[in-house]
Image 1 (cartoon, helix red, strand yellow):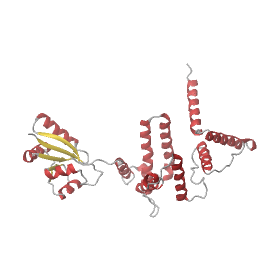
Image 2: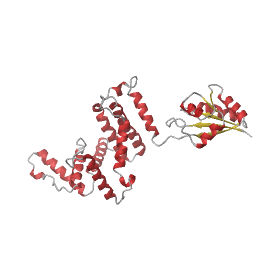
Image 3: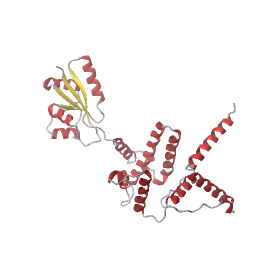
Image 4: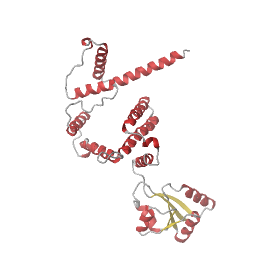
Length: 324
């Protein structure tokens, strides 16, 4: 009966020694070979298992261990040790019957594990010896890039291109991670990190969704939204319903948001009449605001509507440039 070689792969993003029951059974019952010392080798030895470091002749060393014990384990490093697996696979293909090769996952990356990689990569880029451009940035110098990346993600959504959206959201995430890394360089008492950003977000999501996390009655979507707003008002203690509105957003979106906020609390403040304005620009502004109010009443997004019409006009311009 052929022996057994287990290629044991673990997640480098989880604490060493956090293995499945099956993985612990095999490392306790068979010799473990690996290419280098690591936190995992220390954890496994501490649990009483045998671990040997082998840097040359790995396939033969594993076959010798199989001959002596019936089963041998190769503890893969963080990179997965693909060259070792390939060399071993070729050896077993040339000499069938020596041993059976089995891949075992001793642990898996948890959801969101690659976010840890993004933070680690950004830390290296923004640290001494990293990328001079990123180290030279400030929150102020990066502000326009954050807007540009958000607009590009919006374009991908508008185009229905989910592959492009995936890439653009990565660029948005880059901005978030870079801003957080730069904040670690602020003076004492002002600095914060990406963990603070994530922690605040987690606390907010839990606090504002009691129907999920606190056993509150879910009710309708309208009731859930109203409860969200009540919780938000309690948190912020704002003096006006308009506090917190982003004033730098495009004018149509800004008008829509202000009208929405006013309507949400039942404030009947009619927009100014265009005819009452003396200044031509004020007249145009009042007319546009009235158009936004009418769009809101019709449950339409004026920003999206104007964008759609403008892009259609752009296509007509291109067609006119090259008739026939």
